[in-house]
Image 1 (cartoon, helix red, strand yellow):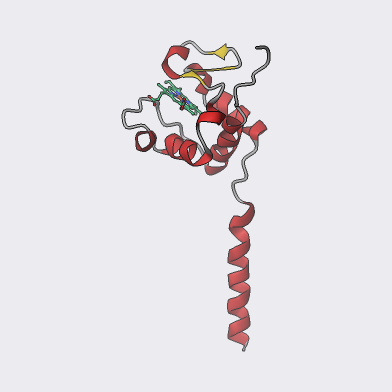
Image 2 (cartoon, rainbow, N blue to C red; image 1 turned 120 degrees about the vertical axis):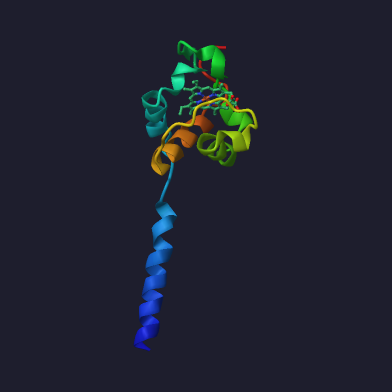
Length: 113
Ligand code: HEC
């Protein structure tokens, strides 16, 4: 009986851990976008970097892509786009989750139109 309750406790503890892990925060993701220099090659809301022609606009990327695709592309670009040329940024799981949450907010309604 004692062993059983121990097993139940362990199982309960294991089950709790992943539940609130990697909840993406769009605001933190915006900071990651800036810190990882994504803006070098991309344009968001009219803000573009010196090589913006390379990556193009991400203004409506939240309409065109979903979280699963973004996760794949940002961790293994060539698995998502066979001839991908974008460099793979070194991101922690949390940074990745935040970045994806931010990218999913980009739905084409960036101010004046
Ligand atoms: C050196 C230039 C460069 C940098 C830096 C860069 N990208 Fe890109 N990005 C590209 C290019 C080029 C593409 C087009 C697809 C390809 O060739 O990989 C692309 C495509 C994308 C796409 C897919 C867009 C679509 O229309 O589906 C996303 C999302 C993206 N980049 C996000 C990011 C994020 C987030 C960062 C920062 C971690 C970043 N990029 C940094 C060059 C860059």
